Amino acid sequence: MSILVTGATGTVGSLIVERLANAGADVKALVRTPGKVAFPKGVTEVVGDLTDVAAMRTALSSVRTLFLLNAVVADEVTQALTALNLARDAGIERIVYLSVIHADLYTNVPHFTGKHTVERMIADFKLPATVLRPAYFMQNDWQVKPAIENYGVYPMPIGSAGVWMVDARDIADVATTELLKRDRAQTALPGLTLDLVGPEALTGDSVANIWSQELQREVRYGGNDTEAFERQMATFMPAWMAYDMRQMMAGIQKHGMRPEPGAVANLEKQLGRPLRTYRNLVREMLNTKS
Picture (cartoon, rainbow, N blue to C red):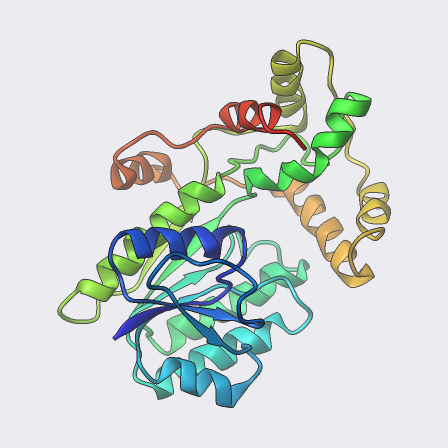
């Protein structure tokens, strides 16, 4: 029996596939297009789509453990609930689901409240699952590196409430640990929910200050204008998604993204090392040619 990884070609999914393969697990990677990505030796590609019921039934038929990651798409909830229902039908009792922090709080943000719906299904059906709730990915800021370097502005309107940004590699490390723990257990393990965060609260001003220090020239925070942010996002993504991102940023400004007490210490204990910092990622960005 094997571990099926959905979202296997994405930022987090590809890291998880690599880590599972390195740990000697039997890994299946769900892909839409075969041969598009060079997976590690021993990883089996499974061609399918979360909306293709027949393909998913086939993919899940020889699977012991499921990692469920849904991209932010218009039918995200349908994809996730269908996959979980098919997993139940296949008798899978070992699941790790990638949700989002404060899914129950950002009630007007489509992809947040959609993930909350999935969490409710997991709870209602008592599915043996680890629910991972990551905060804002540090790696999101790769897309704004040119604006920072060329114009001296940090443009993400994250406000001042405090965001415990998390490195995608830390997400992958925790997810891999949870998948292996569940896959190797003699019986299905009880449900678990984990906030995945970085080691510190960041604000628009503090992020700009980190960039200023690392670039050794002034970088200012671009401010809290979510309308302008939506217009910019709409230049390279669908309008509905840009609006979704705008609502998310408004929620970040209002609520922040803060973990439950003790979450940072618990994550560092699980990983056996400190969490990666935003400053270190900035240094990596600056040492990488665009």
